[in-house]
Structure formats: structure tokens, C-alpha cells
Amino acid sequence: MKDFEAGRIGLGVNSLTGGNSHYIAALMPLKKETKLEITELYPGQLRVGALKDGLQPFVDRPEAMPKLPVLPGVLSGLAVIRTQNESRDDAKLINLFRNTNHPALAKPDQVVLTWSGDPQTTQSIQWRTGPSITKGEVQWVKKSDYNRFQPAQPKQTKATTFKMENANLLNDPVVHRHTVTLTDLDPGTAYIYSVGDGSDDGWSELAEFTTAPGRTEPFSFMYMGDAQNGLERWGSLVQSAYRQRPDVAFCIMAGDLVDRGNERDDWDSFFHSSRGVYDHRPVVPAIGNHENQGGHPGMYLQMFDLPKNGPEGIEPERAYTFRYSNAEFFVLDTNLTMESQAAWLEKALAASTATWKFAVYHHPAYSSKPERDNPSIREHWTPLFDKYHLDMALQGHDHAYLRTYPIKDQKKVASTAEGTVYIVSVSGTKYYEQDKREYTEFGMTNTSTFQVLDIQISGNRLVYRSYDTDGKLRDNLIIEK
Image (cartoon, rainbow, N blue to C red; front, top):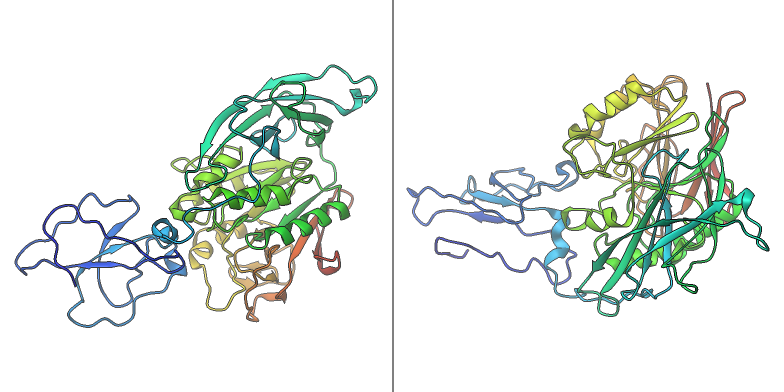
């Protein structure tokens, strides 16, 4: 215990490495008759509570955090400052200053496609340059008009550019990131493009994208769980997956794309490992707890240009929805409260006329890892999945592979026509144990996978397949409507 004078108090360093959970601070007045007032807490996500047996000491995701054990009587009832467990890296001393293995150059790199508007008629493109390049643009042309010997005159669109500064990145503290959203594109059309600064030698290699079809057509997409660790080996998986299935229209990632979401060197490794894939096929990301490092996914939101059609009162791009052919996708943020997104989710599900409906989020409704559980998802979201018949929930976080039986009202049901199938997957190299649960139809551990979902219009069929790093089929499911 330590005494403090009235006034501003700094609580010091949490840990040397940032690997441990935060300490919590319990406070009592020196004299019992004195009323204790705690004001101006910083950062703003901190909360004051009363110390008692079973208290959840952290404000973020209480169902996933340990509760306090039985306390000595002298501590019971004291005021306690509830901190944020995800902020544990913010006060570390070791490895605060880092180097990136992939520093920026004058020539563009980290070219990535996303959607921020209608996939039929728009395409967002982001990329990086070194500090000397302060502007950007995209040249683009329909693939049908392109001839490498006599290319058609390309159109040009100027980029929005911002300076990204990371003082703790010793060998590459300043880069520029550029974003362009192409509009008024033709549906179902292939385009060739290049990004650069307008100078003769400042252009990227040619790449291409294809807009979504303007009518109902069959299509395929890829889905992966956590990359997070071992990004070089994950790069081998995503490159191999794309070679095996170059026909996929886009790639879903259900959170934890990186391990340290607000440290740029991790993102540099992620984009380096996925080069040649995400500049040809849009990535559709969800926010995991590791993107939320420090309590806010700031760098994630800087990296990706995404739809701004999520719930009111929530930061844009953290939750969103989009439609592709006869399927609709509802991307959610499990770092926020489930309740804060439930009304928007119900409205979006109720308005959807899509044949196929998918939810994408990080923390699973039905966990794979022992002793993990996320009841608030089942309280606020899965009843909506039941009511509007969601076909699949694509999840991550538990670092194993799991596919549930069809579930409705939190019970196994006879067919996919009645219930929702929940998937957990991992694409990186960190693995967890797995319990056999009553809802598990198929599960496996120590296996990195990628999933391809083929939506076939003839017969209204969804063919779901999961492959390992060698391209071997490990799981499959067919849903017919």
C-alpha cells in the first residue's frame, strides 16, 4: 500500500514486456469519514467500481476475462479503477522501439483492394510509399480495351494521401499512405490498373480487379481465420490458396490479421506476405482483439477503406454490410458491445433480400478452446441469426478449426434449412487445444486452413470446403435451398 496526497496520480509502468495483464488499483481514504472522489480518469475507457469477490477487473469483454478471487476482508468494498486488459502493451519498456523488415521505398508497395461502396460499380485501392512521395494516383482501363502493344489511353484518378508517423519504428518512422475509390465502373467487368505518383518510373506493376456482377451469378469466395502469428508461413498459405483457387471473387478475414494491431512493422509483414493476392482480389476484414491493441483499432482503420454503413453511434467501418450477387455479408465487431450493434443488425437482416446470408466476426458464438465462452453473442446476435435464418457465421479467435451442427435456439437441429452453421478457423501458426462440445460436428487442432465457399445458382447450392496448407481437403459441407 502507498499513500498519496490529493491531486493527480500517475500509476506507473504496468510491466516490462507488456505480456501480462494490467494490475488494478484499489483506493481507500486515509480517514474512514472522508469521502473519496475519483475524477478525470485517463484514458477515458477506465471505470471506477467497488472491490468485491468475483469482480471482473477489466472493462473490455468481461465474459472472457478472469474474475477476482475471494478477497481479504480489509479490501472488500474499496474503490477500484477498472482498467482495459487490451492496453497492457501501452506501458511496456522492452521492445518499445522496433525495426520493420519491410521499410517503405519511393516505389509503391502494399497495394490492397477493398470495397467502401457498391462492389458492382466501385473499387477502393490503397498503397504505401516512402516519405519522399507525397502524392498518388491510379491509372486504370478496362481489360477488354487493353493491348500491351497498343494500350488504350488509361483514365487517371487522384489519391487522397496522409502521412503515417510511428516514432517507435526506428528504421522507417514516416511513410505516406494513399487511397483511391474508383466509381461509375461497369458491373461484372475486369479492369487493369497501376498505382504511382505520376512520374515515368514511379508506377507499380500492373494488377487487375473485377467488379461484382450486376445480376445473380455463381461466384466463390475465400475465408480465413487468424493469421496473426508466423506471417511468413501464413503468406505461403494465402499464396498457395490463391494459386489453387484464382477464381475466388474476394477474401474474408475474420479478425486478428496481425498480432500487434497498432505497431506498423506487423502490418508491413502482413502486406508483404499477401502481395500478389490482395492487389488482385479485395480483402474483406473484420476487427479482432489484436487489431484493437491498446483499446482502439486505429491503425486497422487507417489501412483499409471500408463501407461506412454500420450502426449509428459506432465509429464508421468497424461494422458494415455489403451484397455480392445473391449473397449478403454482415461484418461485426466483437470488441464493441454486442448490444450496441444488435438493432442495426436486425434492421439489416430484416431488409435483406439475399438468398444467402453470412455473418463475419472474430470472437465465436460457440467456442472451440477450453474454458472460453462468449454468452453475450448468443444473447444479442444468435437470436437474430435464427429469426432471419443466417446460413453461416464465419469466425476466428480460438486458433483451431471447428464446424458446428446447424444450430437454432442454442440447440442442434436436424438440417441447415432450420439452423445456422458456425465455423471457427485459423490460418496462422498459433494453435490452441480443443474440447469436444455437444455442438461440434467436426473439429481439428494444429492445422492452418483456408476455406473456399462456392455459391452455385443452379440448384441453389452452397459448397463449402476447408483445405490445409498442402491444399488437402479436410472438411466439406453442402447446403441446398
